[in-house]
Image 1: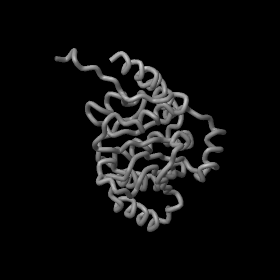
Image 2: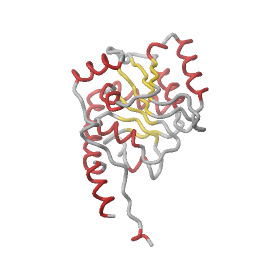
Image 3: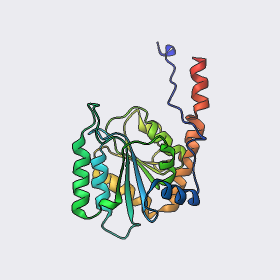
Image 4: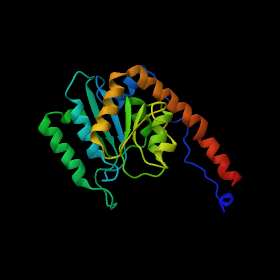
Length: 220
């Protein structure tokens, strides 16, 4: 019976995952060894075929042509692991292609961190290009940090979190051109991107605060 089910979503610590200002962003980039002069696009997740870091890289390479801010790509997550979903070949291919194009210094890999919140606050845009997800904690953390997000439209999952054009952008999963278009739109429209990030933060405050979800678990 429907009344037997109680949905409690993932929760986010709104103090740990919070927006930062430009000064903090620059300081964090120096601390983390990230380039200060680039617009940084962030991916958080292990390297599996369903999370599609390679698709993001392909979309990013298309941004290298044209009059856009100079961008960098930051991958945070395991590129190799005993976990069966992680495929080391994905990162190897990305590294080889970045080297071939002469942009290897603009593609950063971070295998492990215990301070993921610093990478969110150091970034400019967050991307979730997955073809399969549960309720992504990485997405909620990025939204809580006030990042504009480009996200695969996954029915019943991400389309319940992202309201397209209001608090983020949704693109068809596996569509490189659409992903490139979403990134290009945000990079060309920083004021709009900032507004998406502001509303993303509001969404998490209203629906995904850890205090709210903890209370609902206790009620259940």
